[in-house]
Figure 1: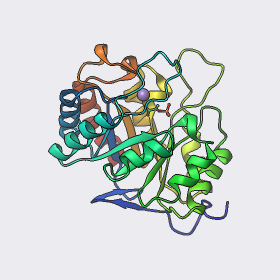
Figure 2: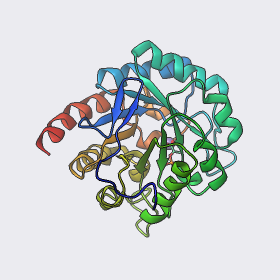
Figure 3: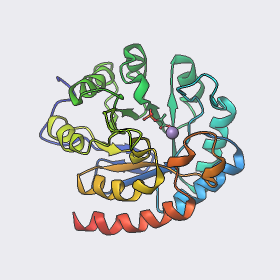
Length: 263
Ligand code: PEP
Ligand code: MN
C-alpha cells in the first residue's frame, strides 16, 4: 500500500461543510432506493431531525435479481438532491458504471461504490479521476487487504478522498444477511490513514439489530454510520426489513450521542 497505507496523520475529508474522519461521528441515512419525491423529503426530514448530515438513496440499484426494482435513475437523483437541499443536508448515491457516474457527478456531494463493484477496477480508476469523495464499500467476500488495494486504485488515479465502509461480509452464518466485521474497523484504521464508516443495515439485514450494531461500531472506532431508514419500511421497494422507521432512526441517533461521548 503506497498511498492507502498508514501515515503519521489520519486523513480528514472535508466536503461542503461536513468533516469525515475528524472528531465527530457522522450520521448518514436514507432509504435503500429513491422511490418518490415525497419519500425523499420525508427521509430528509428524519435525517435532519436526528442530527444526521448526509442523505443517502440509491437510483442505480445493483439488485441480486434482474426482476427486482432497478432504481429510478436520473429522475431519482433529482428527488435525492432536492430533498437534501430542503433540509441543508449533503447527499450520496451509488454509481455502477461510467454512464451512471456522468449522470450524477455534478449533482451529488459524495459518490458510493457498492460492495459488488469493489473490485470493478475500471470503475475504481474512473472515480479516481473525479474531485468528489468516494465511499468504498467492502466487497461481500473481500479481505481487508483487498479492500485497501481497491482504495489504492482510487488514490493512485488521483483522488485522495476515499472513505472506507464496512458493510458486513459473507460467512456461513445465516441468521443475519451478512456478518458485520467490526474487527475490520480497527484493522483498516491500523493499516490505513483513511476514514472508516460502518453500514450496519446491509450487514444485519434486519432492523432489530441495527441499534446495537451501530453502538458497537461507534465503540469500535467508526468515523460514521450509514443507516437505511424509510418513511414506511413495509412498503419499501428494496431492503424494507432492514430499514429503520423514522422514529427508530431518531431514537438511535440520540442514544449514539451518549456512546460517542463515552469512547
Ligand atoms: C446500498 O447501500 O444500498 C447497497 C446496495 O449496499 P452494498 O453495496 O453494501 O450491498
Ligand atoms: Mn440497501
